[in-house]
Image (cartoon, rainbow, N blue to C red; front, side):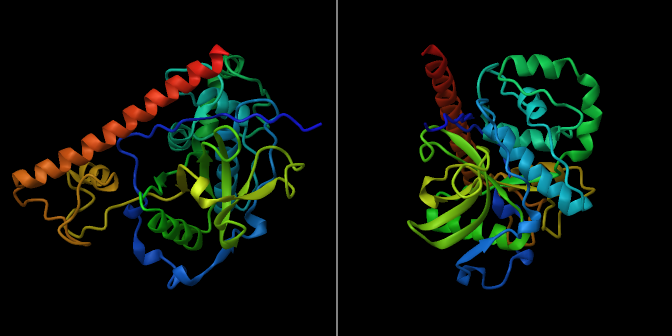
Length: 316
């Protein structure tokens, strides 16, 4: 009898200000990375395979696994993070029910982090999980040291360009990616990707580690066709900064420029100059507003789909 699997990735909703992958400095990129056909994160950087059981916590499991990798790289120590605390603590505002939004959860890795599983063992479905977490506000300070500093979304519309960004991210940072898929697993599901290949059964594929225990596929791991992947996030333990020589970090407008540039709403005069004191034309204002409106429309559409999905799931 086949084991019934839980899922838990709600349709994705990003902040309008989510940082694009292009904001990262290209000087770090591996030369000739486009010629490399396959890569996997070294085995000694891979966390243990988790099992979410019947709980809709796939997003929490993928995020906590990724946090474990980042912590190991920084400290040399493996820490298993509490998926229960993460699942109950990091919630979307409209739902107390099953599942999480991947983009919201990744952002909460930056805002809150997570606590070691040794400090919080409880693991239930929502809304009971949220009640258990709310009883332990004393754990908040213990989560703070494990917050990530930043994250970016690999989100180019062109699939070929997006694939190149994924390859570059793996080869440059040697870190896992948090990904989700609406259809591949049967229901929306989130996993941790740890490599890529261009020689898969369906061509371009991402290697992933699931949260369905070691009985799933090859010891809990498998691969997914790249065309089946939706959201892709790179979590980082480093601060993202502007590369413009004429925008110093102590400028009063530094963060404003950073947020808008990283979100793809504005551009520089060239790769190293922003020209902050230059006048802005009506045409440039139109371009900025149009980009912002496009982002808002995508966010509103995603939110509507998320609400419909939630209502449909729980009306059955």
